[in-house]
Image (cartoon, rainbow, N blue to C red; front, side):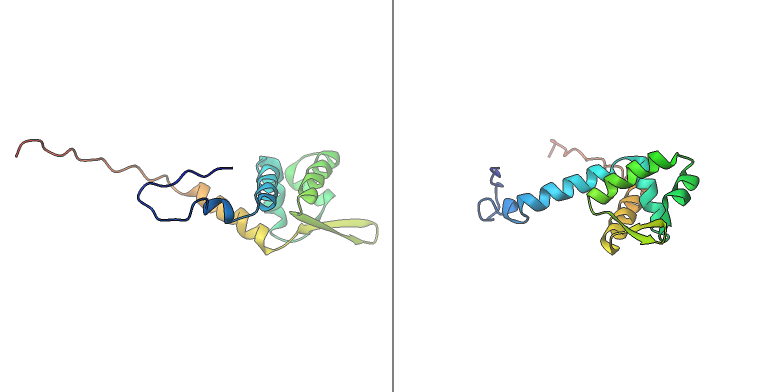
Length: 127
């Protein structure tokens, strides 16, 4: 991927491309795709309150056990949630604090009132 040079800047050529690896970009994109579906995001928000089993998550979301299980499968595949066996039950939890921070930062950003662009005053051509 070639990065165009910025006019008036003395950044080394391609500096942006070296900030993160292609692998990290790919993994981040997959993570955002997994979180990009409202029902899966709702599960992640519920798990931010603590671990829960599929039955509890299904009851809270009013979805079938099968549907919630499939959503959890996607979230597990992207290391967003982890599972822990407790006897016959499997409890799910967020993988780490990064996930919680990411989701709540996104929700905070989405809750902000968009700033209106300031009106640009035209310069008077009369002098």
